[in-house]
Amino acid sequence: MGDQHDHRPQRELPPGMAEQLDLPHSGMVSFGHRPFLTETAQLDAWQPDVAIVGAPFDISTTNRPGARFGPRAIRATAYEPGTYHLDLGLEIFDWLEVVDFGDAYCPHGQTEVSHANIRERVHAVASRGIVPVVLGGDHSITWPSATAVADVHGYGNVGIVHFDAHADTADNIEGNLASHGTPMRRLIESGAVPGTHFVQVGLRGYWPPQDTFEWMLEQGMTWHTMQEIWDRGFKEVMADAVAEALDKAEKLYVSVDIDVLDPAHAPGTGTPEPGGITSADLLRMVRELCRTHDVAGVDVVEVAPAYDHAELTVNAAHRVVFEALSGMAARRRDASQTPPGPPAR
Image (cartoon, rainbow, N blue to C red; front, side, top):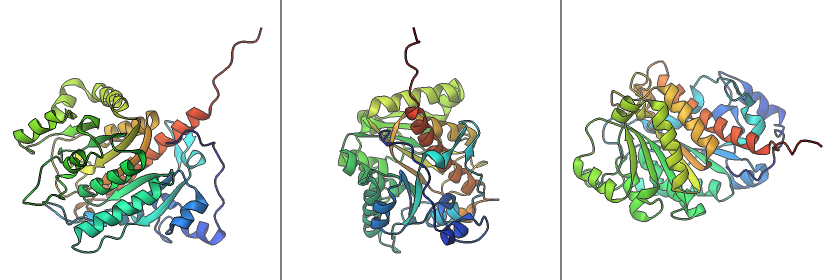
C-alpha cells in the first residue's frame, strides 16, 4: 500500500446504487457490497486504494475443474460479516477505498487470450497506483496477474508469499506450460519475480518430485512445509515468513491457493490435500503480511464452489480478502498517527 495518501472520508454513493449494494440477499453482486466499476475512466474518477478483479479461468486445472465459478461465488454467496474489525479496532472502509472492477474476459478454451486479458486488466489497476486483489480462477492466473504487478513496479522489485499445498513450480504438466501447477516457474524464468523473492507456506503431500525441489533450491526459493509448522508451531513459522518477506523486495504480492487449508476448512477446491492449516492461522498470517508490508497485489485462487459444502470454502476465501484489506487499512491508520513529540519542559 502507498502510505503517502491521506486518510479521506468515504465517497457518497448515489441513492440507487447504495440501495442495490446494501441488500444482503439480492440486488447487485459486488464484493463486500463495494461500488461496481467497469471502465478505466471510472477508476480515474473514483481513485480507489484497492480494486477487486475477477479472473474466472480454470482450463489449466489438472484434477477437478470449476474454479471459473469462484469469483462469482465469493461475491454472491459469502456471508457478509460487517466492516468493523474486532481485533484491529477499525472500520475497514473508513481507511481504505475499495471498489469492484469486475472480471477479466476469459473466453472458453483460450488460455493465451484469457491470460493476456487478465494481465491487461490487472495492469490497468496497478498502473494507477491501485492495489489489485484478484479472485481466481485456477492458480495459473497468478502468472499473468503477478507479471502485471511486476510490469508496474519493476522486474525483481516484487516478492511473493505463496500459500499452497503445492509448490506450483513444475516445468510443464503433460506438455502444458500454463498449467495451474507451473505459474511460479514461469514467473521465475521470465525474471518478473526471481526465485530468491519467493516464500512458500503450507507445502505438503506427494508432489512435486525431488528434482523439482532441487531446481527450487538452485533458484534460492524459501519454503515452509506443514511438517515444519507441526514441529515448530504456526506462530514461529509465521514470524519467520513475515521477516523473510521483508528481506525479499520492497513490494509484496500475496498469493493464496485455498487448498493450503485443510479440506475440513475448504472442501470446495480442485486438488484437496489433507493435513493443511486452519482458517484461523491463514487469516491471521495474511492480515499480518498486509499490515507490515507494502502490498502491491493479492490473489485468492482455486475456489471451486461446485465441490463446496455449506459455503465453507467460499466464506474462507472471502475472509482471506477481508483480512488482506483489514491489514492494509490498519497499515494506513498506523502510518497516519503522529508519534508523540518530546515532553514539554
